[in-house]
Every structure is written in structure tokens, then in C-alpha cells.
Length: 437
Image (cartoon, rainbow, N blue to C red):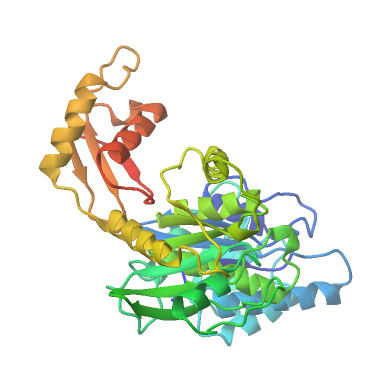
């Protein structure tokens, strides 16, 4: 089941406001003019231990009602195909419109769970008026106010209850075998990399961006190495996502990252790292996946002394603060360092899933903390007494102390750097928490 939550509805019902509320940041532009949301925007949320991607379906262009309706139908259809949960947002201040009824008819034919959220219910009179929306026929109907946040906690409870537990992944896959997602912008050589590893033309390879539309799973089982390869469609900049088909590809690439244990982020050596690559890397980090960077088309670069070293230095300056990542320079076309890439991916997989003995963790970290104690807060001395690793799929550590809320972010980064220095965690995203002992 997909971990994507799509917000659908007619223009100006508050989809972007709800989106910002669910992801906890102001990412979508908000205005009371129809059609402000020009792109499909995606963000990330977690609630009750469930992580999921929230998609704000916009893309409306001012025009006739027919254009609006046609675009909305396409948006709803994509959401029905790709999302695990659909939030159908309506507006109590306008009541049920013909377009609301049309969207409801489409959604009722779909087997996916739909949550009907009636927005702008912020007083007793509107609470009474909102009851008419039960007539649309959705069992999961909830009254909310996106601006004030009223009812959004209950909405998140319903979403978390519907979504499956654990990490995402298609049925039929052996969950004990590592899953590797090959991601990156279009035309950097992702499908060529899959073909080079598998040794056959598994995927269609052309120089036209966007050839790969779906996420393709391939079992690699050679030289005593075994893992699933996930070849995804290229993740484009949102401004360039014009076709609905491209929107499918972006959603499936996001899903592939969620399903993977380790992501191989491919860059074009002639282009270097761009803002969209950093966005993909941020997406991988937020999902706490392993990361290996593969700089492809290295054979096309004119070499001088320390060319690779300088390239990697510049790369990591832009990636900061998450720089403990393997970087491999290759030419997939020439099949350079292909097997080294495989070995590195599996090393990062082991780094991500390793369990450090609690006694070892405390022996190392408490000695460091004693020499470099956390800064005091308003005269209160913070004492860290104990460290433990949490039983989750990625490296997460909890430090028990007397004033957990007053530990500064800079000290959190210091502890993370010390963990990386003393334990083999290269390529793995780390979480550090503080709890009262």
C-alpha cells in the first residue's frame, strides 16, 4: 500500500493551508484567489509512528469552468491511482457544489480509502451547517479548520490508522533482501546503470529525459551479492512537470525512496550537483535511508591533478552538514567501478542496520560527554547519564539527561559527529533524541 496521502478538491477550499498544517511548515503559497497552487507540491509528515508523503494537488489555471473540471478530474484520477489515502477537502462556507458532487461520484467508485474533510468549520453555526456533507456518503467524514488547526489532529489519527505499519514495499518481495533505489534527475544514466549491473537490456535506454515511467524492480543475484534494484523515473524540477504522466513518475519515485533501504543518487559529472539533486538528497535524509552518491559520465571530464578530489570537496560543501556519504566516480557506459558501487551500497546497508552494544555505546560516548559537557541553560547544568540505541530500521540514539528540552542544536550536531567518528555509520542518516532520565 502506498504511503502517499493526496489532498484533492475544487479550487479555493483550503488545500494548501491544510497541506502546510499537515507537514508542519509553510511550503505552499496561500491566497484566497483560485488557482494559486500552480505545481503539485509534496512534503512529509509523521503521526503516531507512521511516516507518509503529503501531496497538495494544485495546477489549476484560470479559465472556464470546463477547464477547471477537466483538470480536477485528472488530478483526482492520479490521486486514486497512486495514493494510499485520499483526503477530499470541501468548504462549509459554500456548501455542497455541483463540482463537489462530481468529485464524490468519482471517489465512491474507487476502492481506496477516502476521508472527507469539511474545512472552515470554526464556529457553532458552521458546525451545524457541516452536517449536510454526510449526504456525500463517506464513512470517514470529519469537520476541520485548516487555519486554526481544529480537527486536524483527528484527521491525522484517521490517516495513521489507515496506513500500514512498517516500511513500505510491494507484495511478493523478500523483506530480508536489501532494496536499492536508483534515483536522480532525468538522463543521468539510471536505466543504463541497471542494465550494466544486470547485464542485459532490462530497461529501454534513450537520451530522451523521462523514458522511464514506472519504478521497476529487478533482483540482482551475482558474485554472492543479492539485492533488489529499484530503477525509478527521473525526478524533475516541479516547474518542468507539465504532463500528468510525469506527475505519476514523481510520485512513484517518491514511493521508491520510501520502499528502499539505500538510495543511489546519480549525478551527471558534466553538470555537477544542482538544487534539485539537493532536494532529492534531503528527501532521502528525511526518510532516514542510506545514501551513496554516484558521479556518472566521469569519462567525459577533462582530468587534471586532483580533479576527483576537488570535485568531491565542492560536492560535500554544498551537501553540508550531511557529508559522511560515499562518493564514487564512474562511467556506466564504460562500466567503470560498477562492482565497487555494489560493494559500497551493501556496506551502507549494513551500516544503516547495525546494532551497537549498549555497553560499548556508553563507554565511548559518556567519556566524550564528560570531556565536552553540554552548555548550561540559564544556570542549569545539563547532565547526560545514559545512551541507548532505539530498535528502529535506521541508526537512532537516545541520550537520557535531566533537562532534555534545553540541549542546544549545536551540541546535538556535536554528538552526531562523534557517533560517526567512533562508529561505522557512513552513508546512514542518524537521529539523536534527548529524553528525561
